[in-house]
Length: 243
Ligand code: GLU
Image (cartoon, rainbow, N blue to C red; front, side, top):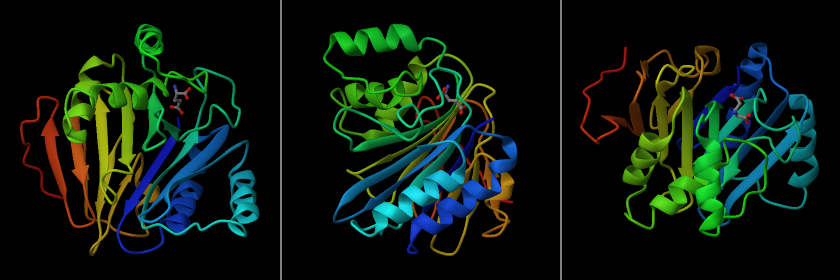
């Protein structure tokens, strides 16, 4: 079972994401990665096969040359189902522009038909995963609507299988969208003071907050640093209070 952690707030996301991934290691994984969003430099993604230690080493080696600042981002530990456990297949995955970032837990059962259609319309894939169809699908749906919320909802309606998906975009820094389709591994939203978290599992959140809300199947959370709004896949608001 893979692990997912997301953060948006005012603190540096990098160390929060790495610590969150450490706390999810017990779930088992074969590769790991994270993306940080920085208002000035955009998105920086780091991915590595094998243990989290490899990812940390990669980040410290690259850190000397480039900024790792950013107050929102997502991290993932992968348990490969489609594609070998390589750096190329590690999450996060992105769309063609690199502006849309996705981490994913589960299996997109209809990924080959979605991928084939997207490739026909010019999308270029860089991994063997089913997961990479998700950012490209959202990208293509963004041509029909300018709203990322709507594009993510429409993508969720086309994806079959049990899936947990977390999305960030350069076009809306500080915003995180989390989707649970069917009976996928959990998505928990954590409420902090002027900061919010999303995680596949409580151990990633417990040191930050015990104020949480869970996503049920076919629900979406739209999160910024102050709050989360919940809808179903048609966009209808779902009242939910953290407990
Ligand atoms: N099916 C996806 C992959 O192979 C996600 C696996 C997971 O849940 O970690 O990349």
